[in-house]
Image (cartoon, rainbow, N blue to C red; front, top):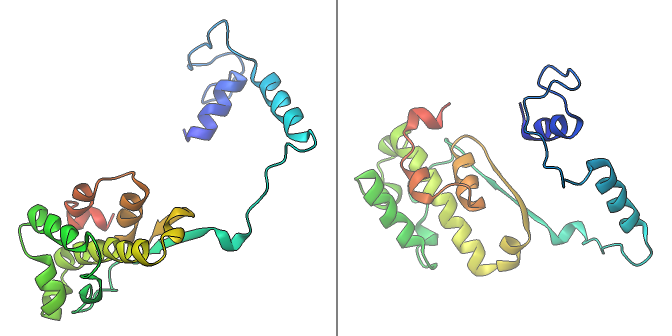
Length: 180
């Protein structure tokens, strides 16, 4: 059961089979606030004049999209090496992977870089290195980011960027798991 559905089921006292009153969710404590009253109170507060929060223009938000396998090319990452922490990312990847990913990314050969076992970590690390460049050149883009997504291996870069996964976890994911 998805989290919003589970929360809704708890609020209404429904079980997974939707029979009212037959819930396997914990009973709220006696001092718990009635959800309906809580929502009514929140709506009333929002309707008061002057309580509205100013909305930012769409141009003040950013979304980061991370690429997947197939975007690798020999030389990728070369323009990122001058930015803070980029070499640290490649060093950390070397420790996790057991080979020099930076050397392979910069000098190839392309046939080796195209192998799944190499291209997925290469795209993953290069994506996060690009975020370092973006953070250095346009920090507001990072600060105003409201969402991150990725295609294939880019999903792992998005998770690391969002703080839901550690860099070392993403670097160590076996290629067969990237494909699932």
